[in-house]
Length: 329
Image (tube, rainbow, N blue to C red; front, side, top):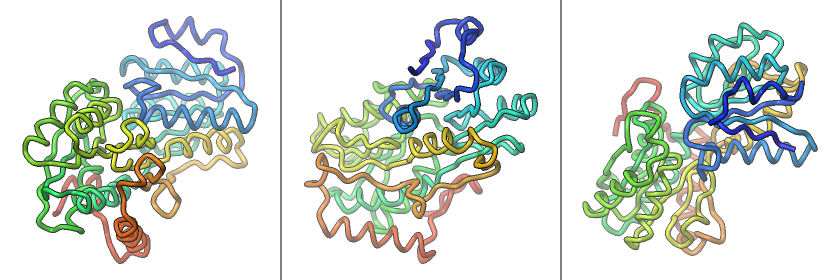
């Protein structure tokens, strides 16, 4: 049975009875059931559990100060591998990984150079390019919006790809860019995200991409209320507002976690170093299901699939904001 850890209880008390050799998953701030990034990690762990019959430990962080403590406690109990979701793990993992050379660590969304660490990053800019193209193809006003969560380079990577995709379809399209905040609270603020969405709609946007974790639920709701379209992120969020969510930019954190729990438990299959998941690896993409099939025409799908093929062949280069902190449009 999964040992879910309540963040409000002291870690030292919780982890004392942890089972040896069970793997561990640590979610980032924003909550395990955020319907987005963290929940994708949870779904991956649950898929591994179903496939293997194994059990795992997990933890929902309540603040940044818990990071090193959580890693040391899990590693000290023998949890292996330890999988972390989120770009904010760099400092804590850089400090703790050398202290436990026999434990395998897997971190998603950041890079830590250590012999016992696998770093998994995604080509979010290419997946965002595809949904940006869909947004421009769907828009009737010639204006589309973007509501990001925390104002950090990773989320600018989403925006920049989205903007490039929209402009590939309509070079004259107008883009409205906003972020819910500059602290980790930005991931769990659907009220602010909803207000930013309403402002974008008032300015003419009729499709708004939410790359904001749990805050994105406010974007989806506000767009639905206004009779406009939204785009979900990370997990397939089409079902949350059927008929209003145009699509979701899939970031297969679930696949990354499931694979990590399988491979990193064994030194023979553990892959230290950098792993990149992009279009060719089905690491990113866009969601098409019964909830949005009527919103995306065959011509729209054909155009976006053509763009995807061109990106994979190298005919189209999507700029990665995190390489130079610029977004050339």
